Image (cartoon, rainbow, N blue to C red; front, side, top):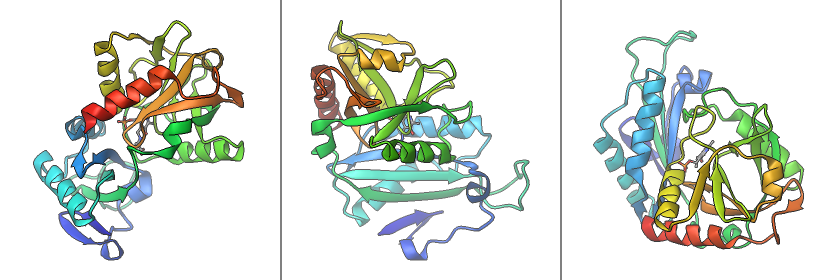
Length: 279
Ligand code: PDD
């Protein structure tokens, strides 16, 4: 596989990063994951806007122009023959002597790679997935897409140890924030789509924005507010959104089926509508 490092396209075994890179030492970096359908980037402009927001929040310089980033993403997709899958992009503050204070005048490190993955005919979307609820022990700026992902990894492992596919995380008041790497939703028995409102508590999902726009156009009712695991258990449907799974049905929470334990009608409708506009 060909990967991108600071302007160079190289075989992955030849790629080099300094041991002093602050991404490696402090998780001092941000990232984006864009999906690829039919060899083309999906909603990449939205991902670039969020990348700049994350960089700004951390006083981090952009490594190069958006046009250069996108040209490199497209070249990677072509060089690696990606038809369906993901492009991962990471900017770290760069390499400097280890110091908690941000160093001045360092060159940011930009790394990109691709992953081929079935997205349209994703077999997990046919049956849906199961989640368990766990406390959200991440930091207080979950709106910044940082590479500090250790707690989500721990939560995913705990979910798997409990026989589930993933975890939905809960704030101190017992309300669900989001999934380990996705935004969380329910559809109530009255057909209302409920998802947590944007704040520092959750990542401002690019797929979330697109799906809510589609739902509004389809005259579906939306409430942006926190919800509890008990509401999920009583819901008609549940699902999550992310660039790597689009709209994914959630059919079980904490060992209990949601409604009949099958992907819901509105969830499937949103998935189909999202895929149509993404293509
Ligand atoms: N994750 N919330 C969190 C914590 C995330 O990490 C992600 C994305 C999302 C969904 O955002 P979007 O719709 O923009 O992908 C929500 C990516 C896919 C990842 O870490 O692989």
